[in-house]
Image 1 (cartoon, rainbow, N blue to C red):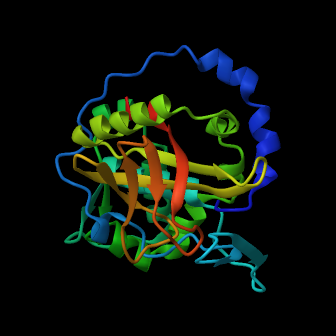
Image 2: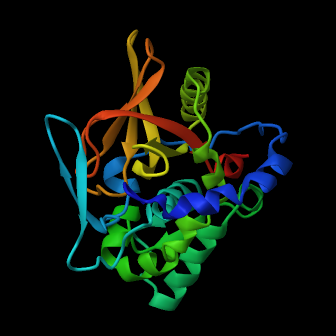
Length: 272
């Protein structure tokens, strides 16, 4: 999901009643997620979530114009799923490059186990061993079709329960609290997944995207969160929180002009 996606807003409204039911749930106590740090060159996929639209950003006005790509991409609108799958592999998979490689059916089962694993299951069964490959980058380069198949289609993003939150205003208090929560999770070794949203104006979205956060650098003026943006497999990105304005900023990308946006965490309950 990226810019120009008002198609999900009508669905977000339908979640409001259900959201009220879960709104008073307490925050879980998190346990350390991993004994090592996330390595972008090893713990991300060797392919990108492709863009369904071509984006032209006016460098002066910042206005974005779009047009649908002539050739429909085979793998797009998967930012929710790709971000979550990367975290699932970081938390629940263990690669063994010295072991003998398996056939597609065996790897398909292993991938499904990693994707569906919960913290409770991991405490009892441990990590899922992926033989024959050194890391997720190598595995996804060799078995791209299997991993893309396990990602599912764009409906996974469309029917995310968390989409209800985007239609409500975000206060500066909320955004500051979000930044502090993200720091706390990162210090425990967790990888927060966040939804980036900015209306231009409502109900059109200038950005509607999901990224994985894996690190932070703090100064007196700002917090620079290191991100895995599923649209970029070549390099990590950055999401900036300005302390003075209490505002998140995403530097210019191929689909968004440098500017402010709102951020909220999703899939938080999967960390307990």
